[in-house]
Structure formats: structure tokens, C-alpha cells
Length: 89
Image (cartoon, rainbow, N blue to C red):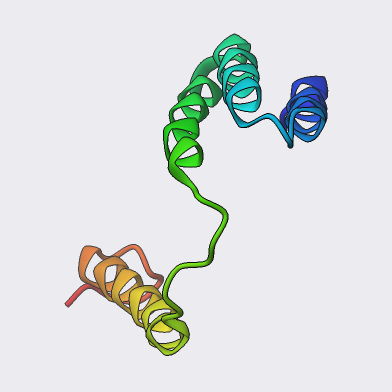
């Protein structure tokens, strides 16, 4: 989907992996040069800047429940709207 720009982004981020500030600016520049919606990916570098390299709290069981629950909720919304292939409620 990203054409050569995606490969370029991965390569540049890898090359600057040990220099956090240079990696952030290189990533921002590359994603701002991309077409349409990909340029909004540059905003993700704000979060990357604040990452300290340690794992956060492990909420494994929450996500085991959340993932199927949110899919069920989305399906129920589709049913209520009549776009799930079965009659609307």
C-alpha cells in the first residue's frame, strides 16, 4: 500500500534506531511527504518520543475479553442498522 515510501520509512527508522531525536525527525519528514492520510502517521512520533523503552503494565486478560467483546458490539450495531445480513431489530 505504501509503495517505495513504506520501505523508505522502515529503512530510515532502522538506520536511526540508536539516535532517538534523529529518528523522530526523519520519520516525521518521511510521513509528511507521503500522500493523503499517511501524513497523519507523523503524529505518532509524539508518542514514540515519550517511550522510555520499558514495558508497561500487563493487562493480558483484559484484552482477551475486550477483543471479542468489541467485535460482538460492532456486530450488534450492524444488526441494529440492518447491514449485517439479517433483518434489523
